[in-house]
Length: 350
Image (tube, rainbow, N blue to C red; front, side):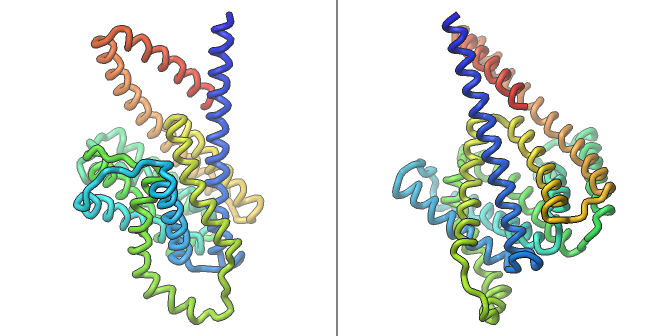
């Protein structure tokens, strides 16, 4: 009885921690998105300089990541050569800089709710680019699912009250660059056995982003900032915004490392619906019934895609566990016990 009670207490503690990680991630992700919207929107804080804002984030995150990795030694750096850095990390940094620049730019022209709806196209972009780079096999069923997501987003766009073509172009560009970055991470890093957590990712990638962003910044935004003599750098606004951006990376590290892909997906859905509700109720963005109907179709497509991916991962894991069980019976028993415990936690978290 004592051992059973201890196990229940241990499982309960893990479940509470999982919910805590989810709540922290949702809160920080929600805060960063709304905060960026507040700063960039011409009707709010009215500082429409997305490259500058992204550079402030990258400069702050680079500095903190350097302190955590090189000075405090909280995280071990990844062993890599200069050749690997130039051929693998630099292209990923370039794509990340473009993705961040365009996605932040979209907040000037589009509502928070509509941007979240457009982001539903991310699986479509990742799958399409994966097929293009031969990292994914073409499947008719998966492509039908991708078309259903696209159809739902198209309906949401049709129902958008304040549709802006330039804003949509910027957000779709951000989705395309982010999807390409995710596929290239698999090709250029994962295939070489190199894995980053969010801190080491910022340590290596953020300085690249800063350098790449400096070029369009000098051409596009620096002349405008020089002409804006009334602007004074608000250390509180940009400082707290940067802290939130860095904290979000740490929250991602906790959520991915301590829970599961399923928990991450469920948390993402909750966050998206909360943002749509917040955008409608607090920011007073117009959300039409057609918007919601289209997003619901896209959301169901994304949910099905995530479910199929999760099932495929579970099948691979089960195959590995079966092989391990055959090789070492005792080890297999321990692994099975852990799987049952994890499955229980996942069911509770979802």
